Image (cartoon, rainbow over all chains, first blue to last red; front, side, top):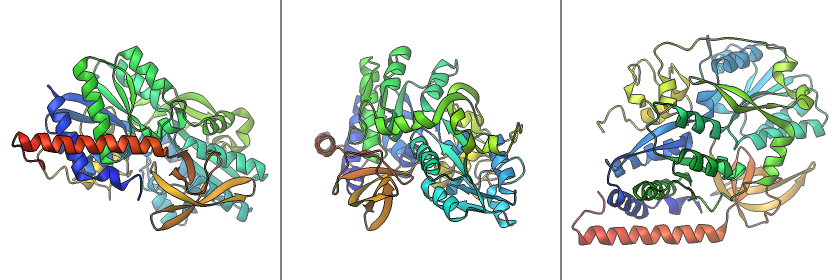
Length: 365
Length: 89
């Protein structure tokens, strides 16, 4: 496909990798935030291509992975209600809650359905007015405009049987939290290209300035990521700390204003708990009071649910970039994509799943 | 879930107050909401995420970046050959 295949060209990738190896005088520690980027890096063996010139650590940018256990338990509770049709993206189904997952609830007769787009869920609510359709709205800034539009569309259609179970997180507060941690080793960040397509780059510019850390907006194909790493290595070698955009074919400085306007109309910023990480102030989105009728938590009175993480899972350390999936004692044995202990092994964007899928537990790096 | 891929707009329609398009991804066609890319026209490439176009691919920027990357690939390979390094390493 155009704008994808050409960025997978092996010759270009080798050239960029050679340039990075040539420029790098020490193993710089670089973090990619987005799980989609983690998968590209593993899938194409970019970590191996770069050798010791760069150490890649993986960030918390997997929305499925950071959705708190309590939210999974709430989704599970809703899916068990006879009047509810719980609708979600496919990768939420196997995320383990405290007791079970949506996939098992579906197998036991719960009405759980998978869609590609939130607009499909609105359509479902319209076609089946006797059902209470709840969409499990999980995601980062990239997905928020789609969820905002679903609410606006449901409002326009006068639907009373559609609501969202919202678990939305924002990237910049997480980067800030990582940079403020005394354990931080990250020297440069690849900012998530599709999040920036929506929100623009100003917040990342502020972070680069405030923490004197280089940040490069990167795309998702091998050449995109290698180019972002190359720009970061150049900055690090030259002692610069700026915001650069390597993904100019999609990201504009101010982002997508129309999408931002819809998100601002429907959602407001709130404190948010991240699975495995804890609460980060102003790091999430919730529905505004005027859209309370579309808020499943208020509509169904789900209240406070507390839950405990399984002991053996080190997902918090993995999500913060302190440990690699292969450092976990359960990795590839007691924790696999078929029987996951934690969310990073479930999601197609989780770092553990990426390592497992590309067999990093079988090779010595 | 966060997958966002480029597709070509084959046709634009109005669908109950929403601007939608039939977008081609290789050989596969899917409907996508175009409300967030009011500037998009038929024949444009858009980045689509969970059924929503979030940007129109900037052709000029794409060409410029690609030319730069390609020249760097060729250049590095030549440098590597001159220094006796295997380009595939």
